[in-house]
Length: 100
Image 1 (spheres, rainbow, N blue to C red):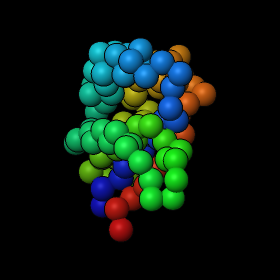
Image 2 (image 1 turned 60 degrees about the vertical axis):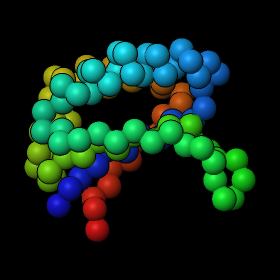
Image 3 (image 1 turned 180 degrees about the vertical axis):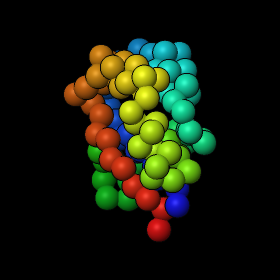
């Protein structure tokens, strides 16, 4: 069963600087995470319930819970997490989900 790490980002003050760091620095680090099958980046464009609470939502897909746990414990993931806390600590919410 696919396990996803989902990162939901609130709107940054400087969108251009955020996106530059996100795509040029952060995502290359994320791409090195073991067992990562695919990443889907969703740019939030609105909400049917008013203003959307998020700016960007990223889904990182892993094949199963065991591979997800290995990935989360890896040095590559720790490097991506350290970078995340450096540029988006106050903007990001992380959740883990399994496809139903």
